[in-house]
Length: 113
Length: 112
Image (tube, each protein chain N blue to C red):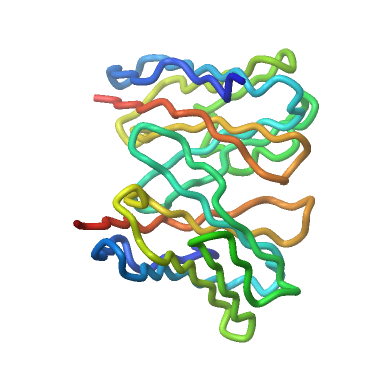
């Protein structure tokens, strides 16, 4: 079975550019999560969708970040404009229902120069 | 403010010995705790969990201990194997329908 699929695996961009990260959750899962991993703060929740509806976006750092889930099999996290402090690994995760066991993708390593 | 703290960023243990990874939390409403394991270039994977109604849960070589009065949990790996070398994240949530909060992780290296 395919797990959570994220693309791209690595993204290098210049400050000010728009960045779009993509995620395909596990088929049949109804909850999707975007996390960011940094050395200082560990894994931070950015946003949580349930049945394609954003439930909790309190972790989104600022208006430069936006996330969408147009259907059950696809989600995007967009940063516009990107800044060097956005450099981190961004993980997408899905679950069968809410906060039960989360299944993570392999992450996108973002570097903003 | 970190509600889940893993104060040891790294730990090195010899193969065959016990690895003990520690986690402290500040939110007394947390009642379910999980450990995730992460290899390089991969996402975290679920390892073991414990409910606050228990003080110990065991799964093969992995045992998690919970001390609610101290707001402390630990993961014991016995015996440690080189394949256990990874980053371990502690996570907690206040109820089944509530947000999972992760710690900063501890990097375990098991040496030969």
